[in-house]
Image (spheres, rainbow, N blue to C red):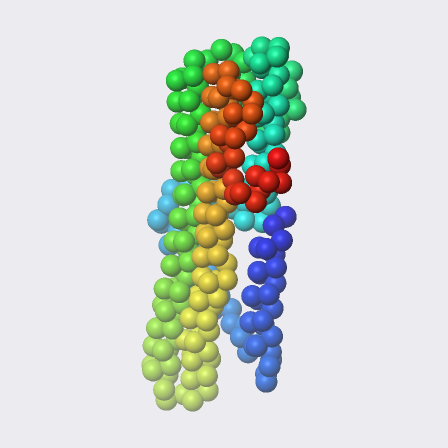
Length: 253
């Protein structure tokens, strides 16, 4: 589980709830009609904006916000260097026994294709095509969350207009002004909170994780092609170091 995401949610909502509770009660900020307008309107607008398969697929992508694994480029480099040593000593076919030990499915597929004797150009094309589709799925997931972050405040404004209209229509009944004004203000509050503490941060986290994952897979592709061409393991290691920071390079030397 991603600690920074959990910490961000706890700190963000904790401080907001704390501020809401100072000088009054939290129940002042609970309004079912407002929640219905913002949540229902945001979900409805998103359903109109995207096909159902895309929305179902984004659920799997969204797991990366909370459960995304840390990208370990250093470990990937170590494995590629070890693979290069085995390949130079015993031949590429000897790598078949190592495939079962590779947890990353993309990495395992790359080694499998290499062992199967796929030509370098075809191997590069297959892996880069898969990488493009992975990037597109991640881009779509981030885009959907960004869209929801844009819809939520808009739905809050819709609720504000509804509340103001109800208030103006019932000006002759003083007892109805308070509830109508509450709907008018709280819906905007709900929309801003959902957008800026959930949807937009989630989109940002997905973009960051996608960039890290794409970089790792580019590292794997580069390393696999180098192993296939028979490059020296030390040369491969130095080449792959360009994908990571100097600080991390020192750590694995």
